[in-house]
Amino acid sequence: MEDEISSFFESSPPLKNMKETTENLNQFIELNSSSSQGGRRIVCVTSGGTTVPLEQRCVRYIDNFSSGNRGAASTENFVKAGYAVIFLYRRGTFQPYCRSLPDDPFLECFEYPDKTNIQVHKSHVEAVKMAVMDQQAAVAEGRLLKLPFSTIYEYLQMLRLIAMVLKDVGPYSMFYLAAAVSDFYVPWDSMTEHKIESGSGPLDIRLAQVPKMLSILRSNWAPKAFCISFKLETDSKILIEKATKALQKYKVHAVLANELSTRKEEVVVVSSSGNVVVRRECDKPESIVEDNLIRLIVDRHSTYIKEYHS
Ligand code: 9Z3
Image 1 (cartoon, rainbow, N blue to C red):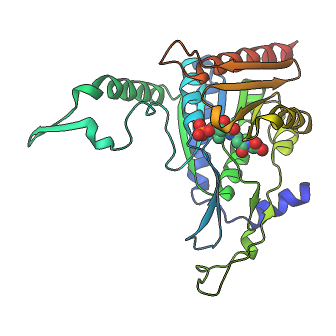
Image 2: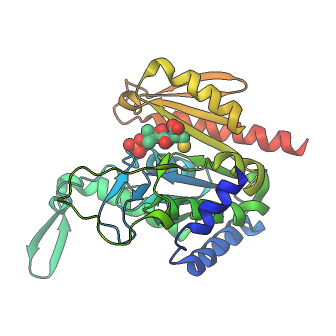
Image 3: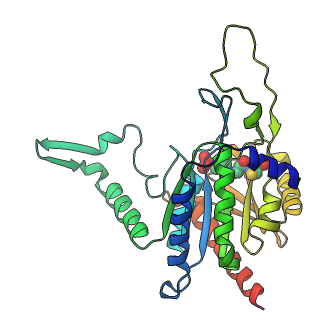
């Protein structure tokens, strides 16, 4: 497995902003782990689906479903709970603090009363005000670092980089892996450079398996970090069994099991201390499942830190 992982990284196209990203990460971690900030806990939240390019000069790609809503909502809740968040997100997916803004059509939020003024439409004032205030506060306090990715190559290289720079934060760091990561891909060196020609009948593509990085994240990249992964299924009958297997195989601290159609209503936290069902509070229209979910995860992280020191 280690060989497969090394060859995946060796053959990946290098990250474009590697130097700048590493500098930003180091600054962010230094700021948040300094004693003046009380040594904040730091969580890396991954969000959105990874793409698998079919051509090096990519025109076509395979994608994994994820709107990014879970990652964005969880990020807001982690910031509220006092964490600093590295938000590793798929370009174009939901962003923290923007979930309640209309995205279609976003411009309807605004009106243009005269040539020199632009203002927010009355019906959206509250939502825009909250979004701007909360986002600006999180950024000004140095609690939110956003890093975008598109492809599986970018995602895994960035995840490894983040794990490496978070190593010294030890048990105060957390990985909350909500991104929907491709299981299959086309290895870069066997991928055609130019757009695949059409017109010559059906296309056969052989996809290789993406090496599972969770085990190496746990054993090697960030062994002291608290680690939460997700299991997504469309068949509820196999969900808990699959999540339990993942818990044992990857030795993460909990697997959050969700079914595609009910993911906004219910998540099951599967861990060695048993399974806990977390639900959205149906009697409160504003309530989201992440409110209760992140509260529980933060509690579990606190217990982990205490046990680590005893
Ligand atoms: C999840 O299960 C997330 O909760 C969702 C969130 C992607 C369902 P949205 O972004 O949806 O709010 O629209 N993420 C992990 C999905 C995944 O690919 N898990 C792998 C698996 O199930 C393990 S890494 O095998």
